[in-house]
Each structure stands twice: as C-alpha cells, then as structure tokens.
Image 1 (spheres, rainbow, N blue to C red):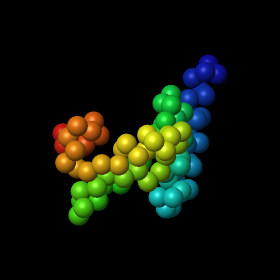
Image 2: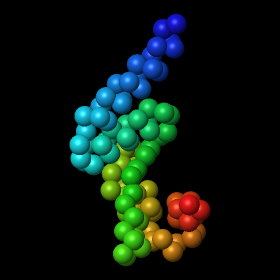
Image 3: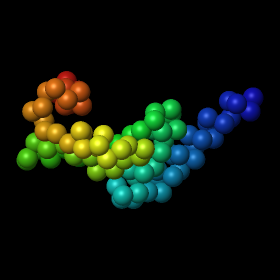
Amino acid sequence: MRSEQQPAERERKAGLRLLGAERSEEIFPLLLEEIIALGHRAAFVARVDFETSSINPIASLNCTRGYLQKQRTTLFAMENPIVRILHTF
C-alpha cells in the first residue's frame, strides 16, 4: 500500500510546486527536475524564435555544454531530430 501512495504524493507535491511558480525562471527548473525524476539522465528547454528560425536551449539539467551547443540549430536543419519532430506537428 505504501508504494502506491508514494507516486501519488510525489505528483501532488510536484503539482503544488508548479502552481506556486509564476515566471519561466521558476517553472523551468521544476519541469526539468520532474523530467529527471521520471528516469531521464538529462533534460533541456529550448526557445524557438520564429522571426530568425533559431532554436536555442535556454534551461537545462545534467546537460554538458557540448551537448547544448549541438542543440543550437535552425528550423531548417532537418538532419536534427528535434527539428524533424517540430516539423511533424
């Protein structure tokens, strides 16, 4: 019974933390922590600038500088898996 309560309690606490956040500077770290808690080794948030077509990481957790540099791209770089995903929507 205890193991069933732990995930629900953790989700409730995460939800409360997100509700208390008001700015992206507060929300991004919480979201990244939750992604890591789901079992991913690293996570990042990227901003897409539709005027310049640039995609740039703006927040990260457990990502190396080199990895984040590789994620800087444009909406036209179809060899990038993230760009391919964005084009499917």
